[in-house]
Length: 291
Image 1: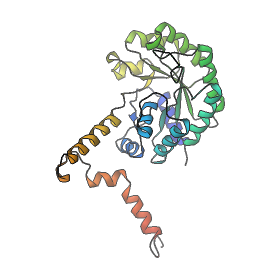
Image 2: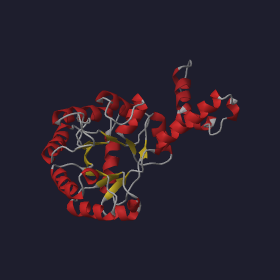
Image 3: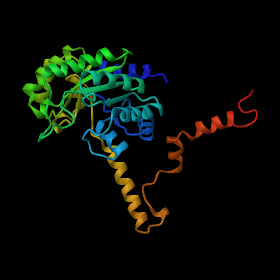
Image 4: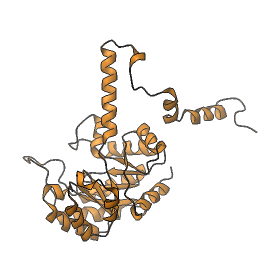
């Protein structure tokens, strides 16, 4: 697979002037749907991957190899640039280097490394942050570990929600100084908080879990926000649809009466049926593809 082009397209988003909403994807089919609908970017969150691979909540049970494999499956299905949430890098700074190696090989366009102490420490009643020095070490290790310079490394922090904006700002400055390509903030709810961040750093900003005050794409773009997540509704919608279909069938409903079923044409589109049939005609029939 050729991954560099999609990495360059991701960087073009960071270097642009607009704020883009990514598609939350969780498997090859969802990624193809996003691409067919014109999304410029896909996002694979750690929480979503945990649901898709393990059926488990977001408590850091998923392993690096499982996460990288799911990212590869998604990337292989199309050409959509994929931003992934690599959590804490699955350990210390040296583990971060291994994480970058695995995810770069898996074809991701960009990855986030966060400064949360994960998994939850014994006796902890809420998430905790590592020190700024440790966070900087992780960011620097990630940058050193990448081989394709087009792969974007994004520093991530939840300080705004865990310890306040007065802690988020110096973390942002320190991580930006480490050389990351962008900064990802979780828990920013108010314009004043984003204004403080935007005044402190000049690297592109990515927002996750932003508040209602931060839904104006034009305002976000003016503050350097280039990507703003809109949650992870697709996998929740898929769970609800599967639940309702199975519940109806279990209750004795006739299959033909189940609503919301994908039409054959849509199934053919998302499975790339025409492409596979073309290959079958070319390579599985005598004289196929000749002349």
